[in-house]
Length: 58
Length: 262
Image (cartoon, rainbow over all chains, first blue to last red):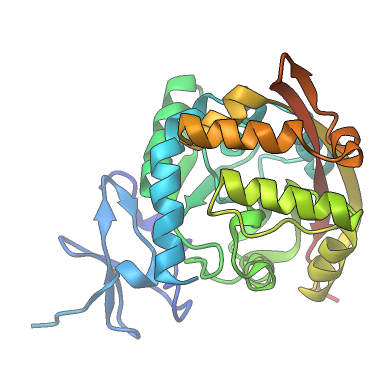
């Protein structure tokens, strides 16, 4: 995950609500407000609403 | 942006990615130089390049700014761009994000500089994208947009639209200079300068870049050869023995900024 460090997360937001996101390994980039996980493929965050998966908190 | 259209864009640019990376018209070009001259990038700038394609704009600006985020809707394109930027070398401040220009995944005011080069004609909703550009730019932030200019003569414009759609089913439409200035102003930007730059396309390379079949290229060639005189004149179509060699279109560059805090 060399591409997704803290500084870079600061300039990422949820494309749906524009709110903050956090990196949760191994799932991906999580928006708690929208309950969505954005996957990371080959170190590149896929920040597309259509590609996001529902957040499974269990 | 609908899922169906988005998939079409990804499919097309995935197929055509190599051609875009290698294309001389994208890698160089007067518009790229003019963008640098107008934006005057500095080492304080955090830049966003929307719809980065082959990464040419990102690579050109990277040595001049603090950081570049390059976004594109196509993962294949992003990977190729990443490869290209790392092969060309010399910069380590470019990062890549798969993103939709109409739903940008960045917080408000995250960037001081924004570029979007020869891409908006693929956007289903340009005003929405412009509103996103405005949101992610800090107050006072500068922006340069470049896109193919819609000819002002309706007959030439109609031919151009038909031609672009025949070549590329992800082409939505180009806009006239008046339409552009209206949309950019309506999104809340101050327009400082517009520049029209001519761009000559090597027809065989341009036609095959999008992954068209031989048959489709021959149809496209026919459309050019049989175009009315005023279209031939506008696009400076050059042919040899019935084959189109080059044509020239116009790109509009808009240099604008988000108004500073009052």
